[in-house]
Length: 364
Ligand code: F6P
Image (cartoon, rainbow, N blue to C red; front, side):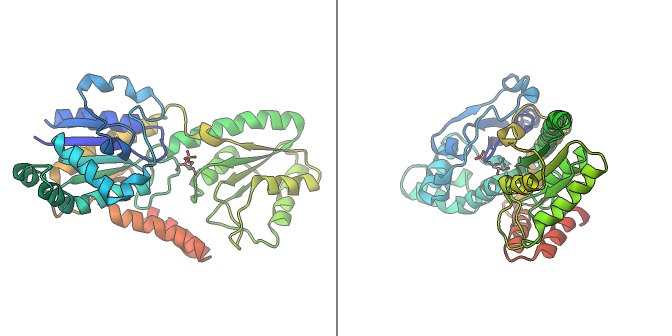
């Protein structure tokens, strides 16, 4: 009988509770015992884990955030702390781990898996675990669920939380449009997404924004203000009372200088707009998950359990994705590598390359 631990890590995202609920319930259905680790990887270090029953997750679908807590746990990069985590897992009889988080959190899980045999050997040599425990816990089986609002992970079409966040952004932009229309004002709205422009681009399309700045499509540093001004003036002339400019938080120009909402406002003010700046902030991450994220998390949570049950010590760590509406298991390390390749292409100003990589995520 497998004993599976589940944790959420990194920035929370709507749908994480649905994912944990699915792991708990599907795990029990498949005759496993499921433990919830609280506060992300920090809970492995502090032995903050609790065996979950079917009833423990009742009603979780409709809660936002993550009810088992999350953290960005830097200690876990340190082998000594990982050893403490390994000890606590063995003490609790756990032999598999499902992590729901972004690329950093999933890489952490693979790291632990790789280190595991040597950590177990150390613990045995130090007399902290018995030879039988070392034998029984020779391998750690892991599987990854991508929980992030940013939708920045390669090899999957959608991350858990991205559509909820997009929905929240659109609702907020609609609200802003009402006041912008009333006053004939321009609004510059910054949206989250770290180095990925997915949220900003989809929000711009969905709300009919007048202009958008994205990390993957940097405008010319020498002329972006004039280029934007031309477009918004044309829209104003055509009768648009409100002007909406969406700025991705990772937006840059082609010299890699950040494009800040204040600089956009300054440019709009100069050509006569009465401009306000709104940073949506963590509103984008809060609230309950939309149905699409609840469904995605539920299906992927069950699939993560299946992946654990199928795994052998030689199976590469799987990440559960979705492509063209079908659940897929892909190599977690490959997905993280491709995700990092986009950021690296942007850093060396190979913007076309970055866009091609993003496109291939959807076409492959
Ligand atoms: O990765 C999710 C995210 O919300 C990003 O969009 C944003 O850059 C970051 O997390 C904010 O992190 P924090 O909540 O730690 O300020």
